[in-house]
Image (cartoon, rainbow, N blue to C red):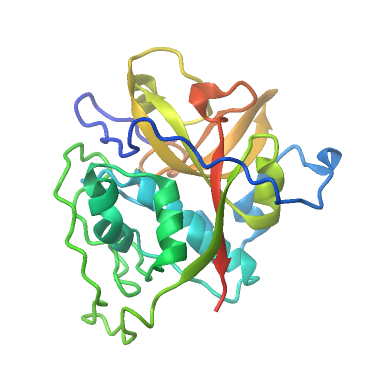
Length: 281
């Protein structure tokens, strides 16, 4: 079991108020019958060679859950669509800095804006702060328990060369081809077919106390909207749940992941999901 947060140290949230997932696409079909949906599914197990599915971001002192969840979805889907031949971590920092001025940057944003940017402009690579990987690795300071909001980093259309990365910013771009919404009725088929999706929910004070098990809201005030990455589902002692990757580093919850009750729209979790299709090289 992971840590919970001491009073006053809770992470600040980054989903802009009033955010609504994209409308479900009418032209997406799945070759999976309802009765073929398994009782449990974990993207980490289904695609074991795709390391990014197992990654947990650390937002630091930036309200960047919207960017970390969406870039995580992109990275996972590049690997899945390429059958593991392209292992790419796209840069949450590039997204925050270069579209942040449109949507709020370290003050908050929207997952769908990341997917649109990925399609229209492209996103460069960049790993976690401790690995110095890619064109623009994460460099925003602060631990998972930082509840400050720092200034949005300046958009720098160049790669960091200090660690031997030798592609230019333009050469390093990765692009998407299509973004679309997914209904709760189709999200299991979507994940089984194409990989994790972006999810959002209403966060209440008792979520900060979560350590393990299946979360259900019981007490505490509404804090704000939160964006995460949905990677699967299952059943625990008769309770259906969604399996979710958070962005508060591995100290939180179940090594950075959490489970939330499924089937009752817990905290608005089931009101819709966002997905994107990568354009492979």
